[in-house]
Length: 424
Length: 115
Ligand SMILES: Cc1cc2nc3c(=O)[nH]c(=O)nc-3n(C[C@H](O)[C@H](O)[C@H](O)COP(=O)(O)OP(=O)(O)OC[C@H]3O[C@@H](n4cnc5c(N)ncnc54)[C@H](O)[C@@H]3O)c2cc1C
Image (tube, rainbow over all chains, first blue to last red; front, side, top):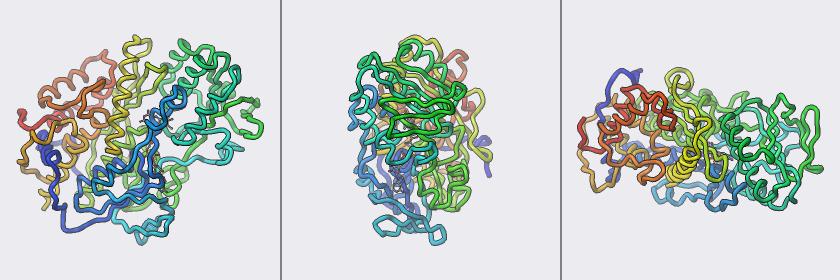
């Protein structure tokens, strides 16, 4: 295999033109490969869009059970600041008009021998290459008492949509002076800094709307993403409205009771009016059905092609993968999708996938107009993704408000960019 | 056939990833001759990361539209070398070799800038 480091490229900013003036109507080759993608989130939709461009003659089918996608990034602002939930919704009409076939259906199973995906409607889709981007499922029961039914009373709001609205409405309905509890799982889970952004947004809501109320965060960990930055913001803005307890302070929740609105740690049972349970997670179920998840509940992948380590011709991207140190983020899912799309196009054209450098940037709000960020740079040379030493890191501590405001504005721009990358 | 594959691959990458690079009408369709091995070891794959944040519209995050290869390379090397820089771009640039930066700058720059 050729190393990416031993040769300068010939592309010279070039070839750009071809794409921008519209792709030729003729395809890659005589063959018309079938590519099936399951999951129309940040991973699956981005993969479909780039593959459509890379392989004009391929048949590309995106299987997605919802007619509209509701994005998680910025959904903490729905909960805490009343951002409209509509601002989170994206349709697939852009993908459809570019010639991607949308199957609004649930993928039930994958036949790895015959290379087909079966859908709830009874349709069977054959594939040459299958890309799975199913996101996460909750591990119901991992916290005793936390089931799908319990989530209707104690929302997780870790998949955006009705759950997001429910948590917002519960906060609004809560009398001033009552307590809110949030529980945070051990890693890995979707969006490592997400719970702490949410805690900030809820604390802001309480401070401004329910000043006698308080949020208690019960965490299964003792440290977390952007921890010192969040704690700096919390000390400044929410000293009376947010209390965080790590594992060492009995923060690990083992049981919840939706009937009594209580949460139990090793030593204590706490009662609250609103309880947001962010439960432990695993890959979306279809990955289990396809046999691409392992005992960890996540999917091991080749870091260059994102092809499953367990089944050939099936690729997995996004939250479902074991891609650490790359976090489970929308940014990662989008970039993994694009890297995977190039690999799939090359493989279907009898070209070997080749290594590259990947990156991630995630912004988190601490107040309505201040945000902090984390960035990382990763190589996929070797047997797994690894961080490039000396790169990445978080926003500076003790920074001027203008720096926080600039990152908040960047976050807004990022959301617009990433959603148009995925949904057109 | 392989050359054609590659042209399509590289051209298409630009649609999504390099959407910041200007309007279609500015471009001509002349393709350089590619060799197979240059496909993904090029800056175009590196540039896939840029389009996660940079769009065609400038705002809080600048559009990369219209910068020459030299301008991009100079700026990225600056980000990489400014030891006390703390912006997202400083933190990211430190992860790329000087060759990576040259390649990604070439991939992002419009046609016609000096090679
Ligand atoms: C509160 C919160 C805040 C976040 N903030 C950020 C942020 O600021 N920045 C950031 O980068 N990331 C953020 N994230 C993380 C981001 O949302 C995820 O990492 C991202 O959505 C992962 O993309 P994905 O494609 O892997 O999965 P998803 O986006 O979840 O997409 C999976 C899709 O697959 C569909 N699906 C699943 N199984 C099937 C099936 N069997 N058949 C048919 N369809 C199926 C689902 O309906 C869904 O549409 C946040 C997450 C949360 C919860």
